[in-house]
Image 1 (cartoon, rainbow, N blue to C red):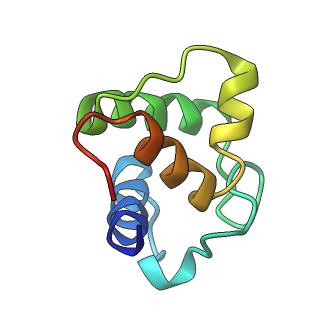
Image 2 (image 1 turned 120 degrees about the horizontal axis):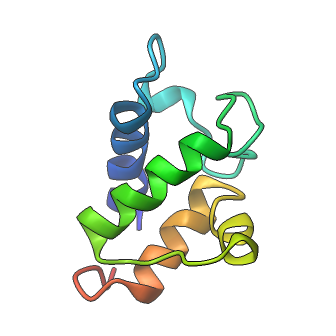
Image 3 (image 1 turned 30 degrees about the vertical axis):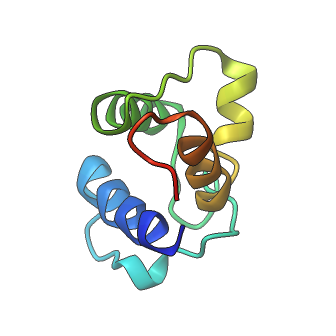
Length: 88
């Protein structure tokens, strides 16, 4: 799980082009959307696409998305639960 969390931190920074943000700046349990990183609904769409492409995981409705993207840890938990490649 720790490896996936670190991997997701890097992917979030790269996917959203977060300048001046390092993986250490992202707290696993802090609010992801609307939190310190100022991730908004457009950013969430980009993260959904990244998850589909990189992990074969689909987030197909708003209610599920709200749960999945509430924190980095909930995002990682969802990937571990749903991804055929990740079983950490």
